[in-house]
Image: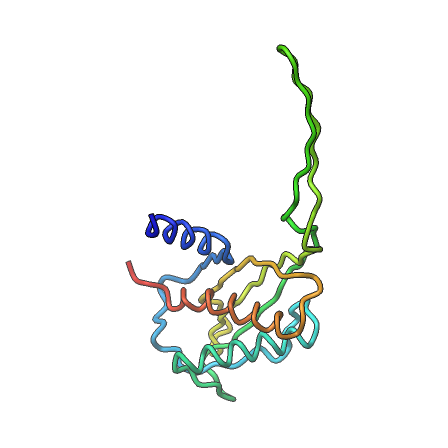
Length: 173
């Protein structure tokens, strides 16, 4: 019984994460790319503080994987985001009903809890610095609370970028 509950909890946790889609040039030799830097004029659509959070997370994750930040990089990292503010999808349901005989009547409604959330689509591009050609792209969707603290935002970006970079380099088939 405990193993069934554990399996259900694992499935639930993996289903709640950010969805990541990857596209890449299948003729690329990914092992040739060991040094990186960011595009000098990133227009991410985010505020400057979020840009810094993303850059710090990329630097940290790349350092763990052996990539070197360089003034003459082999590839450039670009990123941009699209955000939509929506009400929380968590609700408390309230219903009343009545029935008798073969007739039933009911009324129900949901009250949103948890405040509004920001649904974000983050796109990360890797561009060959020598010929300015896109060779890898990831698009991740996730959400965080509208009133998230700076630490919560940093954790959100780190977690979403960690999921993105698990798909780099692509596995050969």
